[in-house]
Length: 190
Image (cartoon, rainbow, N blue to C red; front, side):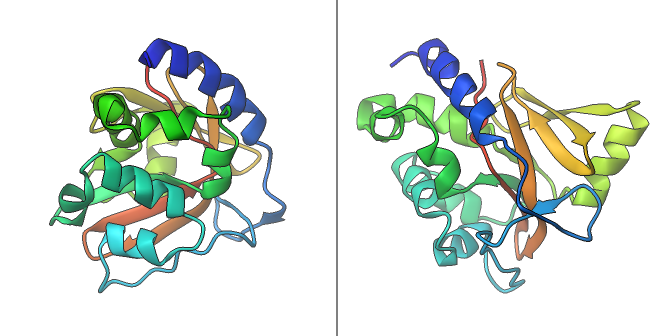
């Protein structure tokens, strides 16, 4: 499976999956939903928190298949934009199953590390970057690619390199080795 074919298929799905969440949170830049279930526990790593979340089983399986568990359990700090199971389910049929195959490990790793930023970047930090950038901020991910952050209707929006859009639905889930921001779509690098 080529990344360009995946990008085209996923971009359309990501746009569809990026509908606004049902309930607004009081924190600026975040839209929250009842389904978000990652709980901040400073004693847990990012990986341990994802494992404990009933809404991130596909992400955990993908991180395991890519061999990233040890890395994302390390000292970091890391910032993870974590797509929910619903975000992965919105991808075209067969995409997730294909990505977790051993022959696609490099592609899976690139997609997953596209959701990770070095350092502990809080929602306030992201909003500050957006404001300093005049309405948008380019964020370099561990994959070496760029996500563009902006604000729409009070929520932080991440636009991937293919035009796919993800909304942060739960922010600032502080863990021992970084921070998690839950998103409603899978972002895809070029």
